[in-house]
Image: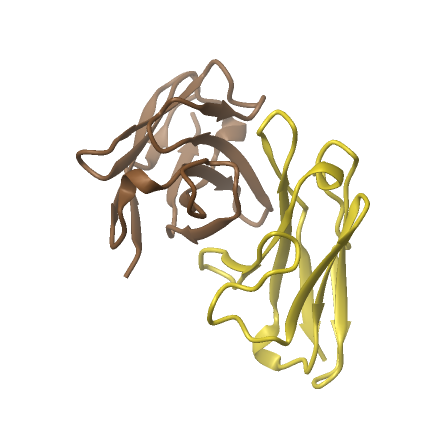
Length: 109
Length: 122
């Protein structure tokens, strides 16, 4: 049972927009930044969003992040088949322990 | 190019010990906090432990506290994880992971190693 709650799966058609939610509590998301990671099968995760809404260099602006209260959202616009992957949210709590969501499998129909 | 390469994984019996190493290159190692994050096959990510740039601040997940010890050698640009009293539920890929700049480990992870597989089985 993950500390952060994500939907197990989401799907949308190519070119569409999809959002992935991440729900936590006042002690984790409510008091710290959120990061988002993309993972393809058999590979290491890749940082997509940090500090809740910032993109590392090289990440296209089709990917966006937001946070409100104890929840965060990853948005992906202009979906491509190459976006099919698992997506994880992560954050830190006040005791400096990290928590991740259970992961969301994105299917591009 | 940032590189994180784990080694030391393998098969171990319950109650046994293993030491993972992570050799790093392509960045100034002692400028960064580091973490270990594990992923059981087919499962999600689980943070294991973190250490700040000089080893002065260390954290552990409750699931490994008292059994695992994280350490680093800045002269060798290397991170370690000593794992004792291993259990079946510790079976996973263990990723060496760099925290974003600032020296603390409690930041977003901006680079990950491919992982070393640890299998705990009798």
